[in-house]
Image (cartoon, rainbow, N blue to C red; front, side, top):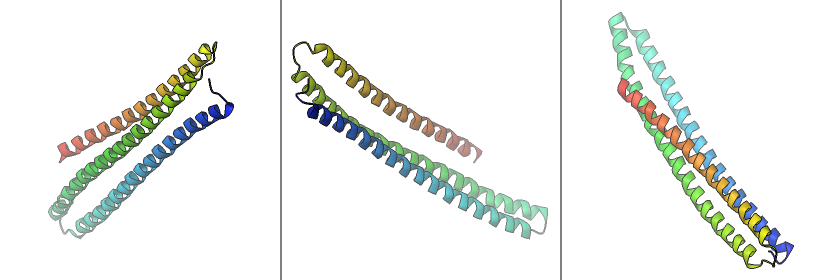
Length: 178
């Protein structure tokens, strides 16, 4: 298989570094996305509180029930517009996170495939007679690791898709109420 333990150690180190780089990149993208959503939520909360305070002041200044209802109705429309804008902004942020995450995963997946292909080539190129079973075991382990990586990537994509679907449903409900 490998001509020396150093070759095996170098190949193992390369694969480990690829996995760590992938994890760090995806974690960074996830944190950036969470930060975007938190900022969006904070802005929406601030806008909502400001609108509610303004509506409360106008309703409090009303001299009769009719003018109080008119003031409440006047503030309901901007509230619905803000909810729609929030929904649109949240959907855009989620789509951006999904896109960046998918791009990063694809780039790292390609790097991992190249590294694994080189490793498999090295393993099969330097096989000593009688070591075919060991080569088969190593290939199977590498294939299993790669399939696991693909499954994690697919699960992440599915989770992001579910979030997008929920946002779309919430947006549709807000639009119906408008």
